[in-house]
Length: 190
Image (tube, rainbow, N blue to C red; front, side, top):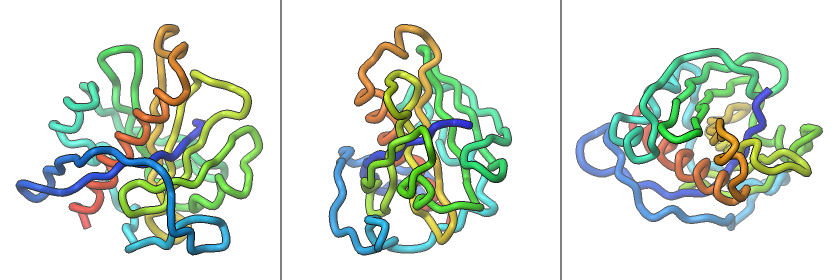
């Protein structure tokens, strides 16, 4: 099972349809409206039929330093495999982007055993940053609350010793940035 974390980044859509450009990443959360501490969802972005390998455009892949997208099924959230895409990086890291359709982000807030979840926002959507309890350098993931009982998950995964030795905040910043890009693209697909 991949450990997933959520982070905050803001993106704006510009230029041609389907080619997002980014605004400066932002972090933090505000306006918590629900009982679980998540901000109210501004709209529903159902991910049932989304291809996670289409959520990073060629331009985005260049910006985040990845060169290959491989579709797969992954155990992102307990209970069922999810449609996912593994993006391989150029420098000892990669990303996994997944469309979870059987459990919402409250799964991470309610406690999933060996992870810590922190409520944040990605652009205008509530999200949870997920990290491994008591550990650093494993990965950092973002789970975005996109629809009822659904989440868009983005994980930054170090694959070399030098990358694993970087500060956890570095891993989470990369997960946040990539989550912002994936959410911006998802909005153009709906």
